[in-house]
Every structure is written in C-alpha cells, then in structure tokens.
Length: 392
Length: 154
Image (cartoon, rainbow over all chains, first blue to last red; front, side, top):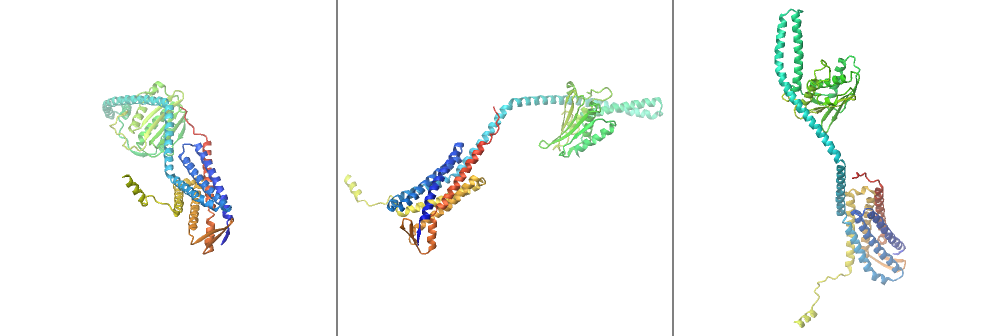
C-alpha cells in the first residue's frame, strides 16, 4: 500500500514545534512560582520535572524535525549516522523525567512536614508575642484576683470564727430559753385568761419566742441543718419567690426584670433553703430601692464549668465601701433598730456555702447593688451536712 | 619474566570480561524507558488522587497530562515494536513524500500509519501540563495578593 507521508510529516513537524514551545511555557510558569516562594519544595520539584520535560521535548523534536528534513532532502545516510545519538539522548531524558517524577511522594511528605513545622512556629511566635504583650496586664489581673481571694479567705475565716462563737452562745442560750418558755407556758395555764398576770406571761412568751427565732437563725448561719436534696428548676423557684414577695408587698411599685437562661438545667439542692436566700436578697433589694426601683434577676448557666449563676441587681442606694466587707457578719445591719436582726445575709451565706456555692456582692453607693450566687449544677459530692460549719 | 609476560599477552584469547552492546539493545533500552515512564506517570496519577490534590484545577490538569502521556507512551511503544517486525510489516520510501507499506492486511498498514502520529497524544499532554502549571501560578499569585493576616506588633 502506497501512502503519502504529508500528514505524518505535518503532525511530526508541527507537533515537535508545539512541544518545544509548550515545554518552554511550562518552565516560565514554574519559574514564576519558584520566584514567588523559593523555599517551596513542590515548586522546585515541578521546576526540575519541567526542565527534564523541556530537555526531552527539545531532543525529541529536534531529532524528528531533522529526520524529516534529511529524509525529504534525500540524505538518508546522514540521518542513519545521527539516529543512534538522537535516540540515546531521547532514551536518557525519558528515563530522567520518569525518575524525577517518582520523587513526588517523598517531596510531598517533606513539603507537608515543613509546612506543619512552619505553621506551628508561626502559632508559637504569635503566642509568645501575645504573652509578651499581655504579660503586665495578666500579672495585674492575677494580683487583683489574688487580693480578692485573700479578702474572701479572710472574710470566710472571720465568718467561720463568728459562726463557731455564735453556735456556742446560741446553744448555751437556747436551753435556758427553752426552760423560760416552758415555765412561762406552764404558769400561764394556771392563770385566768385576760388577767394582768396572764397578759404579762404572754408578753414574756412572745419575746422568748422572738429570742428563740434569733437563736435559730444564728444556728442556721453557724451550722446549717442537713440540706434536702431535691431536683429543682431554678427559674421556676425564682418565679415562685417573686409571686410570694409580690403577694406580701401589696403596694408593690418595684419593677422586676427577669432574664432567665432557658438552657438552665434542673439542679439538685435544698429548694426551701435557696428560697429563703432569694427572699432575703429580694427583701433587701426592695428595702434598698424603697419599694419603687428596678430589680433585675438574671440566671445564666456555664456548661463547661457546670455552674449556675443567679444575679440579683437593684438600683437602690447601694452599700458604703466600708460596709461591704461586713455585710455577711451576723447582726450587722444598716437598717434602723427593730427593722432587721442583721442575720438575713449571714444565714444566706451559710446556706450557699452548705451547697458548695459562693455568694458575692458588688455595690456602688448611689448606683445600686448586685448579689451573685454561684451554685454547682448536680454536684458529684452530696450537699454539705449539718456538721459543716459556715465559712469552711 | 618480562618476555614471558609479553608472550602471554599476545597469545591471550578474548575473556569476554566486557559485555558488547549489539544492535537490538538500543531498542530494548528505549522500550524499557517507555515502560518506566508509563509506570511513573501512573504513580503520579495515583498520588495526586490519594493526596486529594485533584480537587484543585491546577493539579487536575497535571493529572490529565499524566494520563495523556501514558497513552502517548503506549502509542510510541507499539510504533517502535511494529517497526522491528519485518515479517509483519515492511516500509520503504518510494519518494520524498511517499512511502510503501507491505503488510498482509490493509488494517495493519492503517494502524501503523496512525501510530506514527504520536504527537497527537504528547502535544495535548504537554498542553495540559502547561495549563496546570499556569493555573497553579495564578492561584499562588492570587493568594499572595490577599491581605496578610493581622499580626501583633511586639
């Protein structure tokens, strides 16, 4: 079969030229890449692949073009003489391209290792810079926190000592009070109702009962009785307390703002005791705002720390700075005589401590006061028992 | 001693210590280079795929290039093999622009004719290689033009 070689010739010559041009363009782009990132081993690898491809393209194409030219011009012998050398160079360069290509995997691993190290180094550098930048700020913060915790420890120690003393005194007083009450009630039975002696005995009985209530509060502060462990929805409990307070204060002009955390989980605590604490704090807020201010009640759950925070904030007249460290002391009150015993906050402190929690206060005179109760959510250990003394 | 050594040197027969490299060896080496090239391109395709590089257009084009190089090298391999089978095919140049192909069947002649145009595979392969590298270059340029991440001044 006789055939024309023109199509083969055209494809060969044009293809060979295209190969030289394209391989040159490949080198151009990879060189641009290596200029942009000279330390990137992947670009270096691609540059070597491109160099070898270009060498192969030039060698092969030059050979093909030369072959076509020589055969057309009838110089077959010249081509036969050149052919082994052209073929050998082609073979060598084909081996070279294939060999370099095989380094891809290793180069890629090196590139990843270098990139990872570089990223880690950059991160570490940024962290060091940030630490350096914020070091003074952090030291100041830690110093403040230390001073705060020292203050809290001192306060807790003081309250623990007062608690011990109070519980001793309360026990000593409780027994004679019981005897006085018993005898008073015994004597009043023998008296005619409405007689002067009967009325006098009733006054004694009433006052002894008042004394017993104070002693009871003192014991509550010093030695909390064993708290009950029940499942309580804290938002629901606060609502319950608010209903109670609003019913009690019939002419209530106080504005209550509720900001409850809907994600607040059920908690294991003594509902009655926490109710007592909330009543104490809300009554104080009502007193501080003269029953016409605004009280914000906020609950927030901190899932990572498993802590529930209850904030009660009023815009009342606030607490003097000098009094702030004493407000949890038993019998400390700024109210007029007869308005308060000064045991409400002391008892609240004892209850929160017995739940493994914390009660903090911040106040600015003329602006308002904020109490923050922090309680653990479903503590792993049972609630503190009656043997636990407040502040410890 | 000296004359004896000279005599020994002159009467020695070829020991065959150095291997000769005759005619078919060039073809064998060249064919091995094609097989090796095919193998390395196959591995490159596999690595690009397993490293999930083919999701980016630049590397995908390089993967296409490797695939077309495999087809080209197969074409070239068979063209070289057919050239050597003189019993199957015999080609003679009858003029500057004409060749005469002697075969048992015209189909073999057509296949031989087509395999000779191997540039139809290796030029697109190199074109994809070029497109891939151009794309990688453009991506790197665009990345460099992005605002640098904010750094904390010391």
